Image (tube, rainbow, N blue to C red; front, side, top):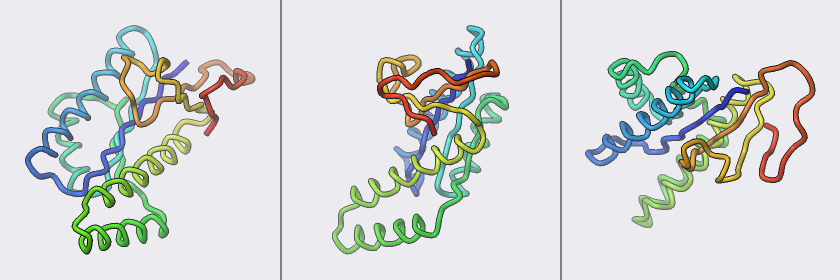
Length: 163
């Protein structure tokens, strides 16, 4: 069985605190994938960002920390409706002075992109939404498993959905 972990980084800017958050989230994902692999479990991580500049920063982190090929950095391919929602949310946030609403929209979109990317790259993945099933007790933006052996997938469990 392969574990698939995902982190969606929804921030559009890398100001001081966000830079540290980016590095922490990337290291957490990289470390979890590495630890699972060390214990003999096949694992892959996906780190989704919404801006090319942030992707470039994560790629530098990946090289600096030797994260390897089991952690993939994804620059979001947005649907037209998602791009429109981002522009609308940014405009509303600017007018209302409420950045939290735009942040919520970016989070939703980045998690949707994460799910689409994993579904396209990991055929047969089954997402788990049970907190107790999350590796290392971390509330991952995405956690799923892929059966390694050919055959019928396991019956769906409560809190688990096929993607």
